[in-house]
Length: 193
Image (cartoon, rainbow, N blue to C red; front, side, top):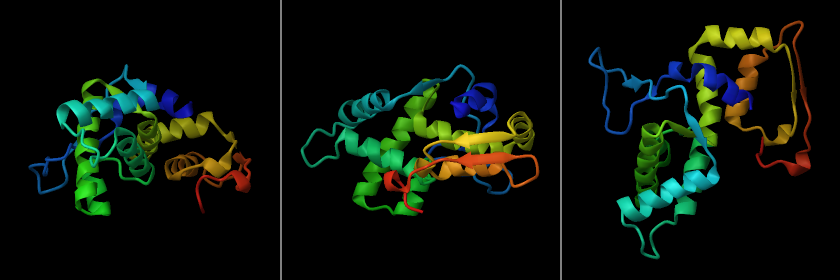
């Protein structure tokens, strides 16, 4: 994947919000940021992610009652949130509200992200938003890849999410000598535009 290749070279440059509970930097109240990712990171697939969430839900939180959210529903909620730009528990609560269900998702979300960072892992959803964020935060990195790739073919364009579109928009601005070809089938779309 293009994202994986970019992150393998530059992931340590990405600044993200500190974990839930961080308030601000000491220099005037800005939201605190950190660089939590290191080279040599691994990528969790859906099964790995579900296993971590299952461990959090059952062992750490003791949620085993039938009315408790299932690990798979929590994984789906976290993945959907990341794909909509809510890449941490704090943003999730700010945008979704602090009701009981959202609070439970946010609790697991924060613990899940903490486990991933401790293990130097990211998941597939992280790969997308981290690359988009990296390109936005570091114009010199963006410039390198713009020069390297002047033409691109996007297959299955109907499945492009907001982070993928943001990367394409950054990498391939409308300018002479650049070509972006998109192939897709609206009848197979998983997103609505």
